[in-house]
Image 1 (cartoon, helix red, strand yellow):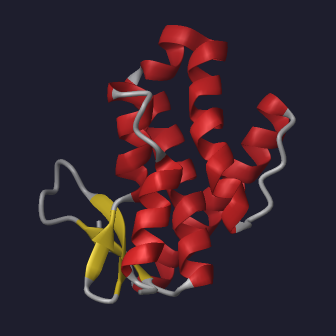
Image 2 (cartoon, rainbow, N blue to C red):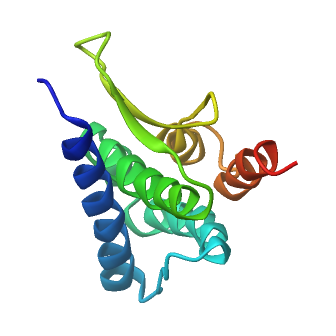
Length: 137
């Protein structure tokens, strides 16, 4: 599937909005598109596990959660510093989207995946802060 840059941007913007709405409905937590709200994403990801246990670790749920929260965090980065979403389908079986900025690629969905599936000590907030710090020194 070929996606234009406009398609990718629209998808990620919609996904970020989906994170806001879903979080409000599920946990009554307001994500406000602020840099400060990125820290809430760490807790929200673990709240999904606490609320839905094994269901949240099914493939489709993992994919959805990691992508909407990755989009949310990435959109905050993009609004703060800039950047452009990039759809990489070099492996047609495993396409992915990263945010590219100043010669770097940031896998915000990937860090959400690490926290959700592999290690609850991995921090989305720390990854975001490191990405910002890499570009503001």
